[in-house]
Image 1 (cartoon, rainbow, N blue to C red):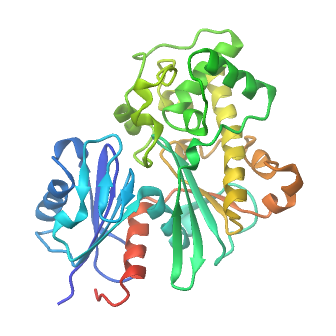
Image 2: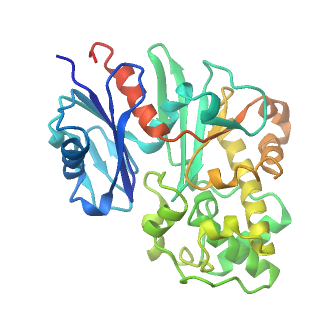
Image 3: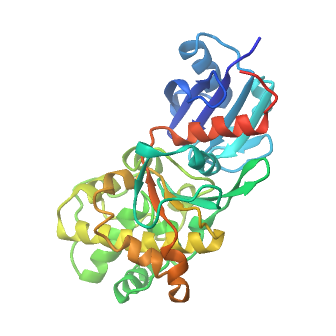
Length: 357
């Protein structure tokens, strides 16, 4: 008797679950559970299977975790969950970092799942990369291998922020003077980073930042306003204990991206320019001639503003000596509903070709 596969995308705020009932099929019975309402992963899995999946027992499972994973062990960043997936009692269970799952989804996304951000059409069969500002800044690569695809996880969000213009350098200097000794990419290119970038720009411009909301949003509040795609061992968990990391303006990422206030508008312009440079660096690091894909919770609300921004120009000029190389790399925005679940299902199909559905 064939049994369905369980797939999950577990972040610090929400845990998404679904069932795959045929090889190559999309997840069904997708349900979002509140992480705070469950004692741990085993409790959330049991609740999903009992309350939303008719009590079915899965034959295999792939769980994408927003935090570090090591074989069967996991630790959920921004939540208290940790342990071993062996405790779930599912015969074949594999773990992925959330951006690994997002990377594996890339060959399975097409049409309305993607919005082109410049460059030629993506080429199948070539190395790809994905990055995304959400609660943090996630990065992963996807390399073609004989068996299909191999995801490559990393912590690229913690490289130095790719400042180029005089204004960007002044912002970094202002933030350092404000108590942030080292400014990495995630500090500015994330849901928690946007308010920090807004503050840095306000300091440079000599204007008072808007403080219409509480002085500092928590990582959990940010994940609600900036999207629910969170990243691995990101700086947000340690931010409250690090000087300067909590120096925000009082505005959330959602408020900044939706405001027509001149300082907010300029903040988004700087954000997209920096993001283009960062994406270009990722493209060169992985040799991602198959395309660079952008995910995360922040960018979908900026989709209409990216084409008119400096994003693509900065992407192509990341390394002036390699402008032609970068110009030939397509960039795309992921707008699919549940790409990490799609990636988890694809990984199970590749890992267990002998298992029937």
